[in-house]
Image (tube, rainbow, N blue to C red; front, side):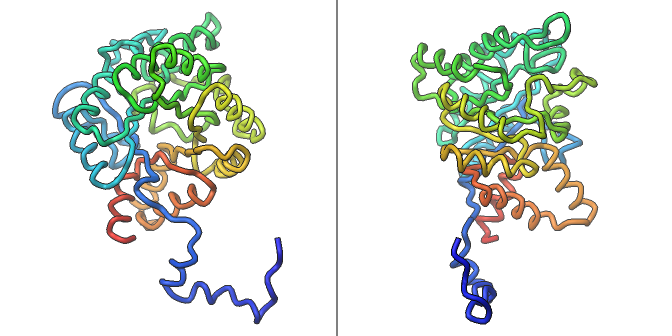
Length: 335
């Protein structure tokens, strides 16, 4: 990099002097089209259940979700991401309910595509909301996940979602080979337009706790962890191998999860592969900002927008964030 002329010939503060100059030279900007809005859905009618560990976020029945989806379109948010909170009675060791064509998520997908056709719909492909043990796959006698048997179920789950009309399937399980298996199944079933957003670099993070509350898997998981399939937080090169494998198997887009603690991974992925790269600002990140703001330690809106801008600066093309609607409203107001 060529060094600038020394002071006083160079005065960097000249470009910070006033608002119009700062706007003129700003390198990264947020827009509502950068956001994917994750929502939690459950059965019933007129049901809104606040999630204590995620202030401002609730589980919604379909009738209460539709107005939210309509507002997303009005705000310019292009995609909504669905996560299920199903009845405990439906949870089994193999999570077979995930493959039910008349299950909660396929029904919600069909309704959204009918009632809010202008909104993109993304679905999670993973078994943990459906298993009685809270893990993302089928376990052997020692509690280790059987990779290939799990992939067969994930393939069926993705097909059910595609047949319901979903736009994007997003495998979040971190099983080996699942992207290739899902892509082949979609092609064979003539779902050639169904996109795959792979959770390619998903870390075994401590930031997921509130999400597990939201989908009801925390109590099932207990003191167990997911370190035998989610990535070690100490690894960076491994993330590039995982992303490369998923792209070779047919992923259209890739994701890094969590978000802010892994911005270095976002940057490395984007620079190495130059493909659509997304980051998930996970439940723990959201909860920390909410808690600090509630205590008066941080200014909520300013910190929220600054954190989201950091993803764009790191190279993310889009962000899954529970702040999507709040941020979009502020950006529309000129924040």
